[in-house]
Amino acid sequence: MAEKLLVVEDVDIVKLYGINNVNYNFIVSQFPKLKIISRGKDIRVIGDDVEIERFESRLNIMLEYLLQHENLTETALSDIFANDKNFETGNNLPSDIIVYGNNGRIIRARTENQCKLVELYGENDLLFAVGPAGSGKTYTAISLAVSALRKREVRKIILTRPAVEAGERLGFLPGDLKEKLDPYLQPLYDALNDMIPQRKLQTYIEDGTVQIAPLAYMRGRTLDNAFVILDEAQNTTLNQIKMFLTRMGCNAKFIVTGDITQIDLPFKNDSGLLKIRKILAGVKNIGFVDFDNRDIIRHPLVKTIVDAFEKHEEKTVKQDKK
Image (cartoon, rainbow, N blue to C red; front, side, top):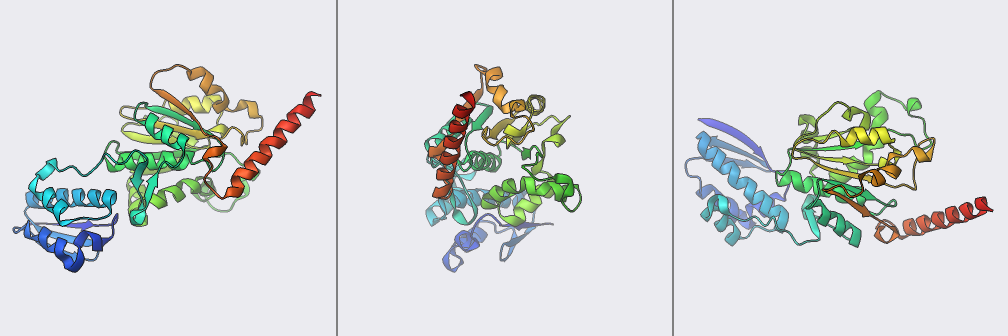
């Protein structure tokens, strides 16, 4: 006699169990050989190993269906059990929807270039997304990574950034190395928190399914079966970006994001992101997406600020030439 505890974190438990527990009662009826005990989001299953495995398989299908459709109908529930493993959960989402986030939140490509990034993702193993702040480069990339993990296309997500100071001094920040570096990585945590329940994200981080680390930690690794995102790539040198790209292992997807107007290196011309496009031009299975001010989806003032800085820089360049 085996026993297993399953925790439901991705969906609203009421939607899974149905009004007056109609879905729950149906599910239990399909497993007469199991003792199923539900306490909120915890489901304790007792019985034969094979039956427990079958129950967990069906539960994962139901959760995936709920994440994509936000409602588990009696018809869908019947089909899940009637068609065994051949049931289609609906992985072919509408073209602009990338993944369902927490509480049924729909995360979709909202601009032309975000849609282009999603489209090119299906055709290329390495993508570069370059553009201004607030254009959704990193957020779209992370949503693609979460989608790939849920569909089991990859086994882990790795997010990395170069620890380059934007006017601050890393050494003067309080705490140990992790506490010093976490502020640089916080935007990546923020995006993940929109898409993965906090408790499950913590588990993923603890078991290595999700890894968030400074770029220097990538040296010497081979990243197999992984979706890897290098953020803030404008602050890498050419050698650093070469080191990162050569980490690509089997069944890996890489996305590099950056904003060439926000280079924090001592000498801007040292940015590897400025040079890499010319080096890799024409290489098969590599795609480039250029985001612009039309893709900015933060507060309307962000677009105005970016436009104002661009005009200021153009004016400065003209004055310097005189």
